[in-house]
Length: 207
Image (spheres, rainbow, N blue to C red):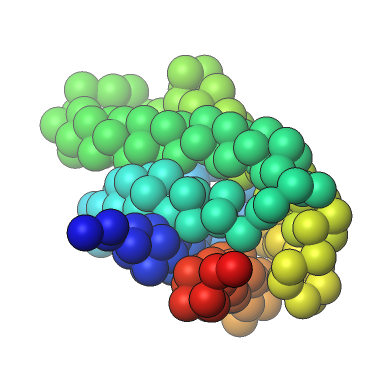
């Protein structure tokens, strides 16, 4: 008996996007986009929750990518594969950041690092990982939006939300908290729509 895996992949996609957005919302904005560790010093109780959410997001988004790719037939298939590659890079970076967040927090609490979390915020290795996954997701979202516009299987507002999310994310440190939450939810809404479309396509009778 053939197992229809698309609904499960679509559900994982929604879970991953939601976890990523909630994790971003839990990190308070302190005016420096590249210093989430310094931001977590403002809200120290949130570091474990953010780490866990980012770990869940990295796994679930990778499991959800097949559902996204199932939407494409011909026109946007190549661009979608490229987008998936960038998103996977972002997911690996997210997972690495989640692990390092736990390790570095433990080092800071044990007074094993000078300057505490603010000192770790300037660590070169952590900054490279942070920029890698942020850039990976950003490029992946833009290429995916292009592929969706080519394929024309989803409403135009879906790729529009992806582009808007990429455009507004760098402005998060200067936006009010409510606006930051809304920006973070843009990608969740877009990926939820993609999951719904992927599931609906599997429910249609095939010729």
